[in-house]
Length: 322
Image (cartoon, rainbow, N blue to C red; front, side, top):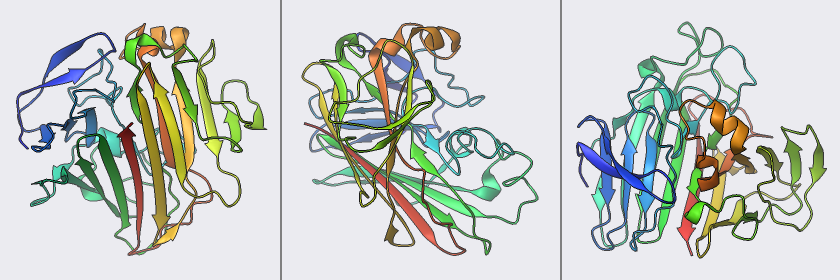
């Protein structure tokens, strides 16, 4: 495990390139026993890539991502907290975790036969960007600390976001891991090779059409327009368990769990792909890269209890190449 000045990051399903980064901002995690590796930036605690022991990349990064800290990074795994989207207009979309530099937790790095990993932390007092002028502004009575832990082995990566209320006043929150999966061979729009199974029976909120409905037995696929849908679990469904087809011979098992002060809470999911028109309109995203990705984003979005003072919420996703 080391920090380096350059790291190979896979941008599309057909090419890769070396990304120049500042020495103190890039962390490479390598599992010595298997050769699996993960690259992340301390800015945003942002995962840029994960490759299995066989060299298969699972994560997609935009070739035009802004990497100088002036904006959130497009692609990889952006962290969303205390909100997803912008239900609270007093501070920016998706919150402040992805817009600030985190620090490595001293002594957290490890590399054993079973796995390798690291933890990063961010306290509210160190949040310089994206706090807004309302709920989380500089004069707020709220306080929090977040710790993001990454663990890898030969064929899986585990991401855990721990959110602690370090103040005395309870607050509402959402949390989401905005994961961009790399779709092999540019097959994102091919429904035979790119789809998501496991959302059967979930309530669908289609942000494009405005429709709401309960999903039947068909897998989720990318239509001929942008897809932006929130999947809310039915009563009694707590954990999220999905199978993602991300191109030919590229299956990923995704499991996500969450709790607030030890009590499990239901995990929702979001599926997003910008498609051609929106991709062309984004300055930090290749105009054709919608063919190379599908976002499958587990989140604590609905029926999440307030986080009381001194309490912790944890949210974990495990992706496994199968």
